[in-house]
Each structure stands twice: as C-alpha cells, then as structure tokens.
Length: 66
Image (cartoon, rainbow, N blue to C red; front, side, top):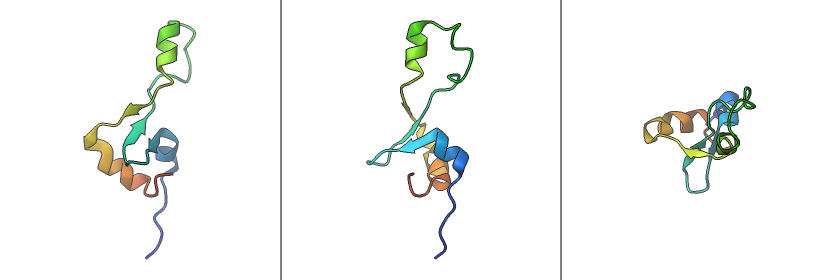
C-alpha cells in the first residue's frame, strides 16, 4: 500500500493525543493580542478538544498523528 500524505496545514493546527483524542488550538491568538486582557491572552495557550463531528475528517488529513 502507498503511504498517505499528511496535510501540512492540518498538522500545524491539530495534535492527536496518545489515546486518540484530537486537540485544537484557539483562534485569534496570532495578532491584536495587546488589546485583550491578560486573562484572555493566557487562555489562548490552552488546547481544546475537537468537536466529535470533525474528528474523522481531521484524522484523515493527519493519518499518522504527527
């Protein structure tokens, strides 16, 4: 069987845990952060669990859980 290519954009945005959960980063953390409160800026660093509906689609884009 040929290898499946990893979607590099999805690889940068999502991470797959050892138990198979797909984690995502929060949006809005790249720029205009100085206007936001310190608490809001700190919350951007945590990872969130992906919606179960999208799990199958993302696992297809990142087949080896890189």
